[in-house]
Length: 353
Ligand SMILES: *Cc1c(COP(=O)(O)O)cnc(C)c1O
Image 1: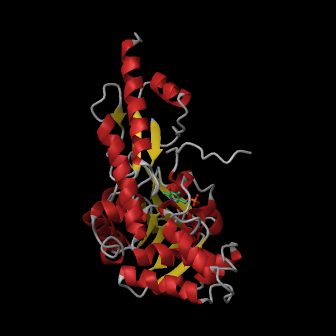
Image 2 (image 1 turned 180 degrees about the vertical axis):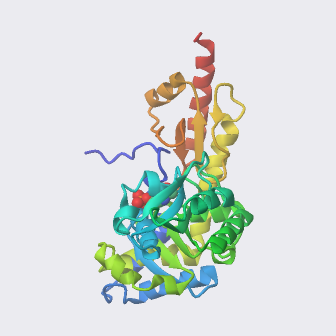
Image 3 (image 1 turned 180 degrees about the horizontal axis):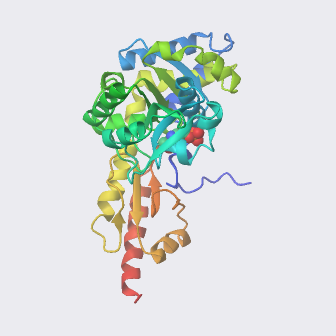
């Protein structure tokens, strides 16, 4: 074993470590003993920090990861004969191994085809009203991802229009906010403005991709929807006995403002890469860069060349190479990646196809 640090990669924003604010809060929570199962002062303070951040008397639950947060939140809104409207690239559809269906005892996901992962009032209405007979699972919830899996951000107006459609059709609105902080950073709005003030009923606020070791917060703006949610968490193996280590880091990132600063930095690094490659021949941005993701289309030779130079990236989401930036992304390393992309694209353009 060597102790040398591996070169920073941008294949996933989950490659990053723990930010200093979360780490220090964890360290403070580690001094002495505390009550178990969320009955401790850290957990109370973290929940209060969320109520301050959202300027709302919301109900807050801490779970280990995003799959659990989304699945349990959706399950709480559904009976087994209900259905959930989502986009074709939604994490709940493509990356949760059927957990939303499993935890809801069979609620079906109704999928709207969408290139950038966004739902619209029209696509929701089409799925919600296409069938109303007893043979089809009854539409009950809409879930939107903010920002989407390909890094697009819903505006306040878009969310408000979706929620108006939901109210009209008797649907609840859930938001997968695995990168919620990044959307707030992009829009320059308060967390309240794009959640409860725009009609969102439940938000899964991601901590892991925002600089924490683990943990997402499930936030109910309508407390009546959270009835028995604590039991659901416990049954699903999501009730941490030493809850302070799951909740404490939130105090660190929320009270210091690191949640937003981390997201701003990550977004800025995505913009840095996008700006560097945008005019390069042979390279193309597949999606508008609105958060911390860059999806790059390039000839196979360029992608192979990047791999040969040691860069890691995924190509199974959105097509092309995906690069994700985290709170700790090093701008000099972003510049190295940009320069390799440009040099390889230039070389590949010189080789006859
Ligand atoms: C990462 C992510 C999640 C959570 O994934 P886990 O691995 O279960 O923590 C949820 N939604 C989206 C859009 C994500 O990118």
